[in-house]
Length: 153
Image 1 (spheres, rainbow, N blue to C red):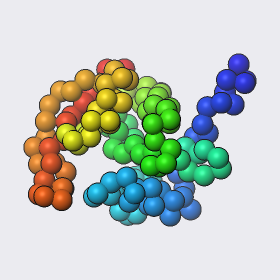
Image 2 (image 1 turned 135 degrees about the horizontal axis):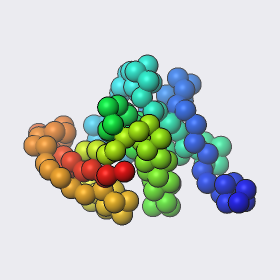
Image 3 (image 1 turned 90 degrees about the horizontal axis):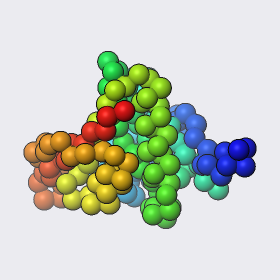
Image 4 (image 1 turned 45 degrees about the vertical axis):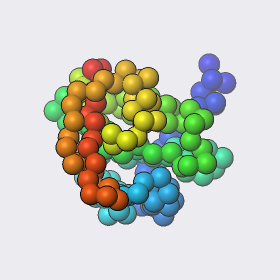
């Protein structure tokens, strides 16, 4: 059993010292990234802000809010060179566990309608599409819809 645990990527709470690396990843994976202040505010608010490490470096991160029997996945990102290796799935499983441990009955998220890979990732983990938030995200040519998804825990 311990050998299996050693193969999992290490997760830890995001710290202010991580924000430079997080910001670099965020800017590389999104056309309209969160700001450093968004991450700092999320940490200050007590949200579940975690980083995942691979090879001694930050490979990905997530921000999860849990309250009143619900969880909301606000951000989940993996560094571009490390995508498509299962790290997003590991990070998502970690967040689902945090939501359950926090007493959430349902976890919600929004994903860009154009993000086919993200939508497929969430669907593989049991999320279902429940609605559309029109013009939710900024886009290079105006606004883009978000697909709202949920998973019952």
